[in-house]
Image (cartoon, rainbow over all chains, first blue to last red; front, side, top):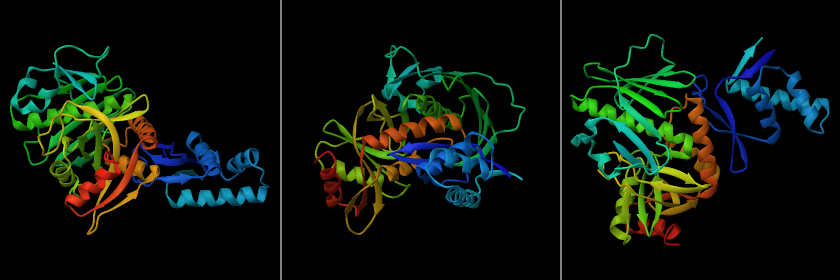
Amino acid sequence: MNAKLKSGFLIREVAGEKVLLAAGKESTNFSKMLVLNDSAALLVDALIEKECALPDDLIDILLQNYFVDYEQAKADVDELIDILKKLNILNVNE
Amino acid sequence: MLYNIAGFDICIESEEMNSPYFSNYSPFRISEQKNENVLFTLKIRNLPEIQEKPSYEFELDGCCYSIYLNNDTCDIILSINNSDQKKYRLHAKKQWSEIEVDTTFSSPDDFFVMNNFIMMAFIYSSAYFDTVLIHASCIKQSGEGVAFMGPSGIGKSTHSQLWLKHIPGSELLNDDQPAIRLFKGKPYIFGTPWSGKTPCYKNDGVSLNTIFVMEQALQNEIIPLSSLKLFEQLLSSCSLMREDIQTFDRITRTLSVLVQQIKSFRLKSFPGKDAAELSFSCSIGR
């Protein structure tokens, strides 16, 4: 499964926090501001940039940037993907 | 004709600007350019019909808008509901620095739409220069400014009136759409030709001291607002087309700097002298 964030999302640093904001007509139903921790911001940033293979590409990013084992990385990635799916802000390519 | 709004020079090439319908622009009139560049030039032109489909459409305050976004241009077709379905068109290019408007000036509606278009031109062109228009009422006091924000009907104007009545030396700067502009990272607030129902068109700007987010209550209370909460409030109260990714990017950048620089409070207020004295004592009167 490949996926990319819908168009119009951007991460803006506000008062030291990384916040996911939505512009663009694909994403205007998303009026919330989502505060991301550093690792989530890294992953979401990748999903804004390009289509990623899920969950493998994101697990790789975590393994390259953090001292975590594969199991922990996979659990974190799965949780994030779950949240993004529930928010309906992913364009998924089965 | 040249105008200076929030420190920006703008040029509107139409004799109709002398009309009494545009008296809100008179205080902003200048005879020669103050800056090296004008923010935008607006010309009246006949524009051809647009064949393509709009990027999106929406309704606001009794008007229908169709927006056409392309790489370096933006077109807006506006029609007023319950009227003769006359269509007005604005064409903007080069980051909103060159604007063309297709309209006549024969009915009050025409002037209403033109005023609306000039305001939009200002919002989107100034967005590239650290400036946002926010929905707020604001007071000038001792050479500084305070802004009262919140949804319509919450008591922004009422609170400004309380300052005018109870805090000596207060002056209404704008009652609906002041501009906030960052100069070297410091926020200033300016009067504009757009002030809602209150005819308060001041060509003046002061350092912005505090932003209050209003809430109605039975007892007065003041609660510090986090930068993140203030950002959220400002984003929902500033005029922008969320769909236009470029200006959204610029405006959120401006707001993220602004919230780091400004004091802000949630003001729970029961209208009266006490409420005005409380907000004064937390801001300029501190």
